[in-house]
Length: 195
Length: 195
Image (cartoon, rainbow over all chains, first blue to last red; front, side):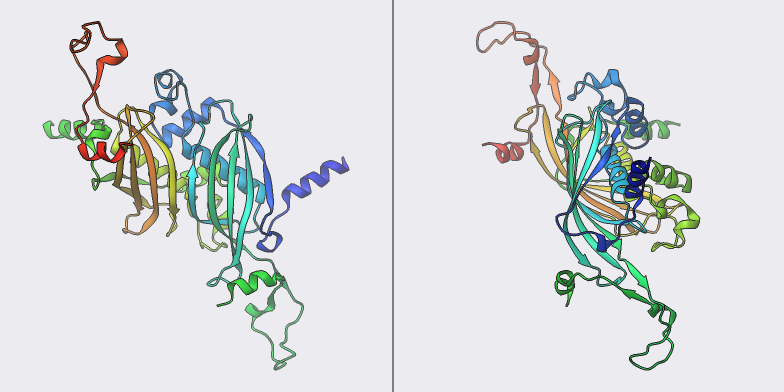
C-alpha cells in the first residue's frame, strides 16, 4: 500500500525547467491503439482509405488498416504530457524531422521515450526556459513508429520570499512583482544565454 | 443546378502525381474550430490547462483557451486531404519545420494553402512519385497559425493497354502485372531520378 502511494506521488510530480538537465531520459506508460480509434481519428482528420476501413485498406500499399501519422503524433503528445507533467504546461514552439518509419496498426501498444537534448533560458520571458527534446515512439515489438525533435517553453521554478522590503538597497517596500526570486542555479545555462 | 454539378465534379476529381507540377498552389475550403472540439481533442491527446478549460486557460500565458498544436496539424491534414484528393491516397513520409506562430482560438476559421515545392519518381516503387510541399494554415484574419514542409508518396497515373501479347519481342502473352503501362511524360523528372 505504501509502495503504491509512492508510485502515485512520483507520477503526479510536476516538473519545472529547473528539474531537468541535458541528457535526461524519460519513458512513458504505454497506450493501446484500437481499430475503432484509428477509424474515428481518420474520419475527423485524415479520411484516406488505408485509415478508414479494414476491408478497403487491404487493397492499398499497406495491405491492411493503419493509423494516420497525425494520430500517432497525437498519441505521442498524450504520452509525453503524462510523463513529463510540466508545471503550467509545455508550450510547443516547433517540431522538426517528424518521421514515421513503420506503420501503426490496430492492436499496437505504443510507448514514448523522451531525451532532453538542450536547454536555455528564454530571453523574452524570464519565468520560462526552452527545452529541446527528442521523442521516439515504439510499438510492442520495439519497432520505431515515429521519431521527432521538438522545442517547448516550460515554466521555471520561482520561490516566494517572505521579504517585503528591499533591505540591502533602499529599505523601501518592493513592488509585488519583485517578491518572487529566481532560484535557478545552473551556471552553465546562465553563461550560455548571456548576451 | 448545372453550376453546382460542375463544382462537385471539380472537388471530387482525383489527383495523380502526373497531374501536379512544381509551383502548383491549392487553397482549401475553410473549417471552423469550436470550443467543444478544442476541449475534446485536448482531453484525448494534449491534456494541458490552456487546452482543457476556458476558465483555467485565462490564468495561463495564453490568457484564454487555445487549440493544441497537434489539433491544428490534424485539421490541416483534413483540409489538405480534401483539397488535393490524391488517387489511392497520399502517404506521409515526414514533416519538417512544423511551427505554430500564432495560437488557434475557439471560433477561428482555418484555411490551408498548399504549394508543390519538388517532385521526383520513387526509385523503389515505380508506380509512385514523391512530392515535397509546403502547407500554410491561416485564420480568418489572415494570420498564420501553422507552417510546415512535408513529403508524401502519391500514385502515378497508369493506363491499361488493350494489348495482351508482347508482340515486339516474343509474341507470348504478357503476365497480367505487365499489362499496365506507365504514361508519365515528364522528361525533366526522368532525368533527375536517373541513377
